[in-house]
Structure formats: C-alpha cells, structure tokens
Image 1 (cartoon, one colour):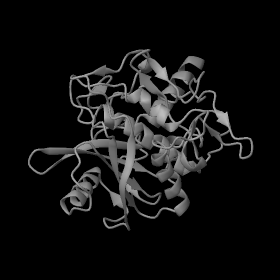
Image 2 (cartoon, helix red, strand yellow; image 1 turned 90 degrees about the vertical axis):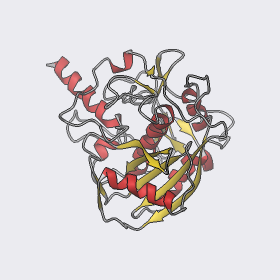
Image 3 (tube, one colour; image 1 turned 30 degrees about the vertical axis):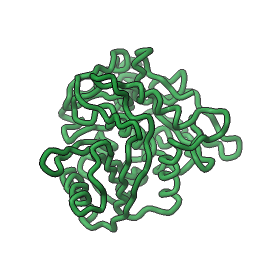
Length: 319
C-alpha cells in the first residue's frame, strides 16, 4: 500500500510541473513519465536552439485582467536575469547558467540571458475561453500587424488571467510552448502560462498550494502571491524548455510528443533533499515566513525549479 501511495503521489507531482511543450501534450489517455524519469539523461536530438549571444527577447501579452502587484512581480522576475541582486545568495541569473550550458551541434550555447523587450495588454479580445490554436493565431497576428517584431530567437509569451479558460490548462498542463510559421521561411517560438489562482492552485502553484487529492499537510507561504508565484515557476520552466528545445528537435527525454525537457525531467525539485511531496530545503524570510530559493531584482524573492545539469547528469538546484 505504501509503495502504491508513493507512486501515485510522484505521478501527481510530475503532472504539476510537466508543462507540456507542444499541442501534443500529456493527457489522461497518453503515456505518463516513469518514476525513474530523473535518473536518465536529457538527450540532444540535433536541432536548433535559441543561441543568440545578445539574449532571448521575450514579447509579453497580458491577456485579461491582472493587478498591478501581479504584473510587477512578473516583470521584476524578468528584470532579475540582468539584475545583480544582493552581493551574496542564489540569483535568478545564476539559475539560468545551467541551461546556458546546453549547446547545439555547432557548439553554440543557449543564450546566456533573458530579457523582457516589449509587453502589451489585451482586454479579452477573443473572449474568456480559448483554444491553443487561438493562442498561436493571436501571437501571429501581433507579428503580422507589427505590434511585435519578427524575432526568430525570441519567445512570444501569452499570460492569461485567472478567469480565462484555456484548452487543456489545469488538465495535466500548466502551460505549453510551441512554434508557428510567420512569413515564408521563418518560425517563431511562443508559449502560454495561465494564472492558476482559481482553477487549479494545487496543480500549478505547488508547493504554495496543496493538491486536491493528496496527503494532508501545510502549503508554503508564497513571497509574491500563490497564483503569481505559481505562474513564475511555470514561466521559468517554459523558458528553459523553449530555449533548449524550441522546435521539437533539441534537448529532451522520452517521446517527442510528450517529452521531458530540461526542467520537467526534474519534477517537484526546488531544493536539496527533495522527495515526492517535499520540495527540498529552501530559504525562509524571517518576517513574512515566505519560502524561496532565489533573489531577484527590486528586492524580490522567487522559487525556481531544478534544471537537468548536462555536466553532472543530475537535477541541479540553485545555490
């Protein structure tokens, strides 16, 4: 019984953070990651990566209503890639160094930084229920209309508010990344992450919210808000996956239609000593009691997931 319980719990955790990279994502009818997913390596399949030396540009669409507090927390996360932060302590920028060690077949590494280049808002122009294909077309329309430039080393990120229902969001997926053709020969990478505050905090904001089905326990205190910090964890996961596997031919483990990527190969791991149901040893703010593992810009604190380290062939937590 104990073995069956642990197996069930680990599979639940894998679903939390197994952000599905493409429209062919995990669902109840598809093969789930195995229990030893983190014990085998993430392999390179020979395709292009996002390797521009000047960095990966993020073009952000706020779809629906977001509070200024939530917006500021997320934009501060992006600013943290370039921010020096405190003199001592784990930084968002140092977290990214693990993924920037991923190299393409010519030896070029993934871009060594990420920056938010432009952001726009959208007040539910396509309603409050969206298909994944609509998100792709939405991004394409922004490029075609010159709202955003055509950037083949960029990531076009759509964030949806808590009252927007997106196809398969909260159904084993907390977001996804894909690519779309723009023009005659260009393909660009886009991604979606939703606010899980109302729809599935236990699925997409763990460990700051408890799953609906699982052992009793106490959720951790979120430094920036449950839904916001859940989004930041999932944004970080997608950034790493999209940079190292943008077109289904980069770094991943398992089936290309339901792959484990740089972060999703390390489900539920945020600190040393992590095990199913326990995120690992984290820093705790003395005043707010919020748990985190990285310092960012403007005094922010964030929780970032472990990344598969190609050098040590293990899940590496920020330190």
